[in-house]
Length: 290
Image (cartoon, rainbow, N blue to C red; front, side):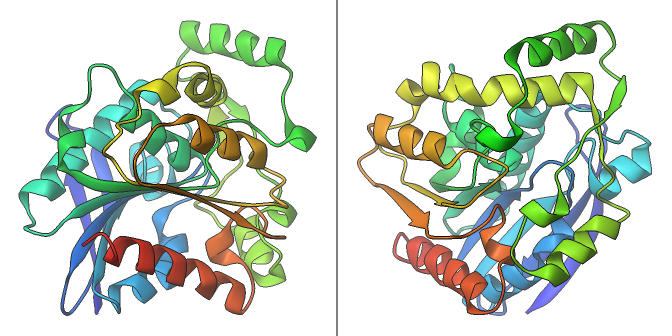
């Protein structure tokens, strides 16, 4: 197993992206992964190294406005849902052309909502036909009640963002809420690639786009596309109930919702054996569909 880092210039708009690949010695299948808000892909080394040891390769990229991509381009937090979906479709098509194995789409938090939005676009985006399944971890369909921003404030932010799409704001996720592991909390709090900065446009798109999945987006989830959705019952960042509702509404032939009792927002970063439970869950679900 090895890790490969690369800077990639996306041909659809010439933006530079930091990409990371966890390469399996004997690959059986592949994942394209989309990370969450105010984070980056290097935080998933344990998780994707574990999957690679089981033959599951992962390709991931620091999204537009985040991680090393933002640092290189000077664009911290500057993003839109439209751009995120175009970027994702570009990388899915690129990875699909480069493999003979089945391709799965996986996202966490903000990324967990992005992958569901990707699967429910109308008309369908070109890369959708390449996918063998979708995995969504603690998706930001809605915020948890304890941190939920007033609707009027979100719409005001959207209006500001429409006028000034590059205008930044201080916003963040409390480190104490991401995991029950004190070491994970401490590292996240001082991670230079996780600054508490977003853009009015990006944050508003994120907080308004998720609820639309429950309003009518769920109707467009493909019946033949397998879905695994899991969420911690003690998540203080994104809404557990909204994940349950989305899974119950879609008509997919092959769907599974897993409630993780007592888990916080990042199931893959919970302490001890709890995070290995998630590795096993994802590994078994993917390999069963290969």
